Amino acid sequence: MAANSIKLLTGNSHPTLARKVADRLGIDLTKVLVVQYSNQETSVTIGESVRDEDVFIIQSAAPGEVNDGLMELLIMINACKTASARRITAMIPNFPYARQDKKDKSRAPISAKLIANMLQTAGCNHIQGFFNVPVDNLYAEPSMLQYIRENFDYRNAVIVSPDAGGAKRATAIADRLDLNFALIHKERSRPNEVSKMVLVGDVQSKIAILVDDMADTCGTLVKAAQTLKKHGAQEVVAIVTHGILSGNAIDSINKSELGRVVVTNTVPHGEKKKRCPRLHTIDIAPTLAEACRRTHNGESVSFLFSHAPT
Image (cartoon, rainbow, N blue to C red; front, side, top):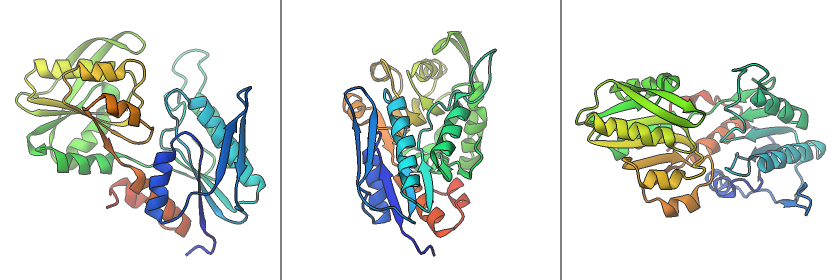
């Protein structure tokens, strides 16, 4: 058991999630004042001592405020470092610039690697969320599996990947549930716009469960739902890890064939939920809280890779 205590900090990106994690751990959030000056500079003041403490900073990439949230995180990490925290762990439910993780064309930056380097330079010792410091990549899959078992007649379902890139993710879920798997091949006319979809697999009279890592404009999910309905699916639902839901995503969902869109609360979407009765939430605060507790006590985090905390 660690001799020092947990200090849980958060900025302005997702305070609701941070409070849920704190409640789960039975502690109070550490007092932090984060303000923006009139010239848009970010200022952070840590309101209590973190000297020799085990610091966990929860900060997500909220839609429309990705860069502000990132600067808040970097400054909070550095403030804790200069305040002599024993260890600083960044808990990042939705990692910023995660889609830019490889050099996919000439002169393309690997922005995700740049963000990782910035976090380390700021003073981060441990990241939960291509690093040269320890990383625990937490998965939403156990929570998704639990949701499917509790909310659907899943024995009459088929797991569907909306593109070839997500096939591994979808087959892993299908295998865990002992269900069949289908795949949609999509052709894009230009970035973020899907022109044509072809279904590989049988969804006739089944509940088609689309699984994906991110729902941004929701163009892919909406077109996938149309394709699945045309092929005789009884119902189409989508379960997505990160509900970015930018642009006209909410209007698209409301007008679509999707009966339900289930997202985790890695990014805030409370206002969008009011506008979309089809939007449902999986709470990942228990997973983050348990990861925090296990890291602090020096216990294995790998249990969370296959189990959802109760």
